[in-house]
Amino acid sequence: MLVPAIVFLAGLCAGSFLNVVILRTREGTSFVGGRSRCAACAVELGPSELVPVLSYLALRGRCRHCAVPLSIQYPLVEFVTGVLCLALFVHADSWMMFVRDIVFVAFLTVLFVYDLRYMEILDRFTVPAMGIALLSNIYLGSDPRSLVMGAGVLGGFFLAQYAISKGRWIGAGDIRMGFLMGFMLGFSHAIAALFLAYLGGALFGVALIALKRADGKTPIPFGSFLAVATVTVLLFGNQLVDWYLGLLLG
Ligand SMILES: [Zn+2]
Image 1: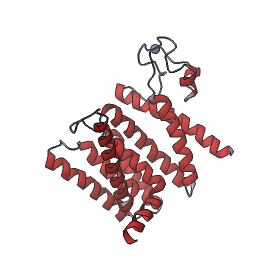
Image 2: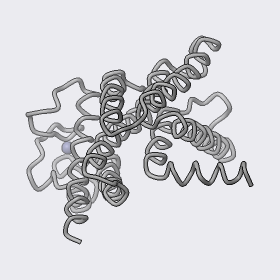
Image 3: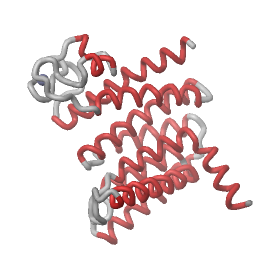
């Protein structure tokens, strides 16, 4: 029980760091050094206000200085990162695989939150992640052809949509996201993730329209769906592909 507990707590702290990365990327300031500040009144946060999840609960979601509500993003990202680290730990066959999955999920979490909040898929995250994914997967024994084929098919699929619609259906960031998914997952799992993302996006769109929160033209942060689908397939890819092949082959 001790190791899983440490993994979970380390995951909470990693989530806290990812929040800093997201916030400071948005503000254009450095990730390292400098104390974190309240976004509203700029008061510096003390050590007791930087404890993942617990600080948010203790402060009842408000800045101690100006009482402006703090974004629910902070505790949510911390908690979900903790849970994901634990799930990856249980799932991984080796420490190397665990480290690779943690790095993948860290990039995907940042991409998820950034597209959801700011409707942007930044190259500064997708491009380095592509290189890391390709090299680490080859190092861990993946077939390079499968990785390149997955990247080519997904990236090409988005590139074609981008070209046909002149950038109206999807953004250029989605093309890079497609390459990244292929390099992370390999061909068959990348296709499974693409399918899941469209399913999730469609259900979400229908739900929004049903709730009259959107019409057919409301932009959907599709990169966030791609990120969630990629994490799902990282964890459950084999079961999903087996299940799908079982359906096809009866
Ligand atoms: Zn404040």
